[in-house]
Length: 254
Image (cartoon, rainbow, N blue to C red; front, side, top):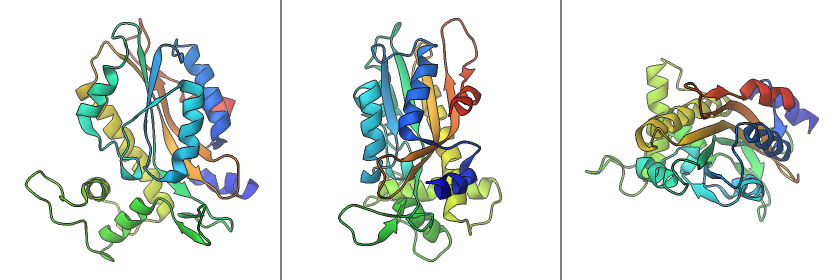
C-alpha cells in the first residue's frame, strides 16, 4: 500500500481509501445540507466491474445510485439522462450529488494500467477502454468504426465517444499523442469533469442544487478497499450565488 500511495502522487497531492473518502465527503456535504434523506446521487464511473466495490460503498452511504456512466467514465448517457436524474428529487427541497472520474489499475508489482481481476490468472488492462483509445490515437490500432448518420459508430458508440473526446482534447491543447496511461487518465479526469459541468448547465434546472465530486479511481488487487485521488469537489447552496469549493477541506481531512 505504501508503494501505491507514493506512486499515486502522479494524480494529485492526496490519495485516500474510498472508505475514508466517502466518510469525509459525506461529512463536508452534510454541513451544506446535502443529506442521504434529501440527496439523490448519480455516478459516472466506467462500466468495468472493478468499480463495483466503489459503487457499493456509495450505495451504503447515500442510497441507490442513478447511473450516468459510459466506458472510461465518460457521461455518455447524455442530457436526457441528466434531466431525468434531476426530476427524481423534489425541485425546491431535493439535492443532487454527481460523482465522476476515470479509473486506473495498479498491479501487485506496481505497473499502472494493469490489475489482476477475480477469475483471471494474470493481470489485464484497466481502464481497458482508455488503453484501447490510446492505441487507436497513436495509430497502433484502427479507430472505432466509421460514424453512421447519427454521428457515431453504430456498433461501438461508447468507445467512439472515448476516442473522440480524448483526441479532441489532445488537439485543442496541442499535446503529444504518445501519452502514458497515467497521463491519459489525468487528462480524462479533466475531460469528464468538463462534460459533467456542461451537462449540468444544459440539462439540470438552475433551481436544483448540485454537488460534484470528481477525481481518479484506483483499482488494486487483493485489498478490501480501492483508492481515490480527488480533483474536484464543489457544492451549490441556498443563498450563495457561487458554488462552494470543498476540495481544500476534503484534502485536509484525508
